[in-house]
Amino acid sequence: MTKVKAKKSAQQKKENSSQGFAIQVKRIKEMFFSVNEQLHIPDPSKLLKLELAPMLGFHVESNSVGMFTRVFYHYEDRPINEILIDIKVDTRFEVLNLKDYLNETGTLILPEDTIVTMVSLSISHTRALLAQSLSGTVWQEVIMPLINPVDISRFYFAYMFGEEKEVLKTDASGKVLGKEIVNASNKAVRTGKRVPSKNSY
Image (cartoon, rainbow, N blue to C red; front, side, top):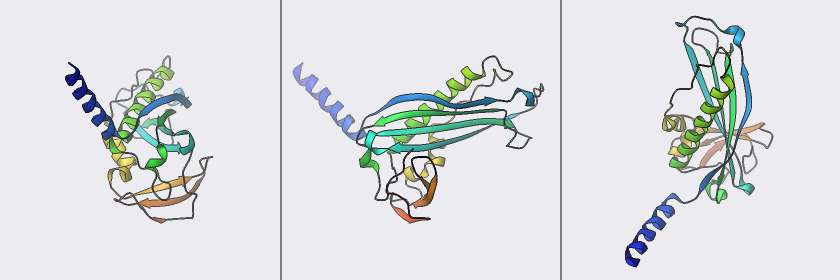
């Protein structure tokens, strides 16, 4: 029994080592919500279009990563600025040894499965909070559809999947300081402006 137990423990240790680090959800917060019932058109043939925009922020000293997910709806045949439903949710994660995942210019490069997990959880939290907030409104039957987190991750965070992508660098207040192109080798190849060595919330 001892040998079997030891083998299982070794296997678990190997699996944990391959993951490289631990991650956990620290906070879920609805940052913003609005609904415009005056624009509602009681016509089942009117199609709603969902727009989704995740944004990543981090703070190295506290091993904290924030996934800010904004979702809003508008009628498919109407201008995008005629917003019917709008919500922004902050899902805060703790990632051990976060500094180990910064490149030489301070861009955060997380493993593929990790960013997909973060996106998946953030979308789920946003869906739940949106359903709760819409309860009792004319839009209460609007439920966010299931969304493939891999596709979303690859689109918005392509540089974490070995593809070239433009990354915005911001200060602690969210002000954009410059742009950086990250190439397939996870190294910055050029910047649009001199920026600090790390991004933050």
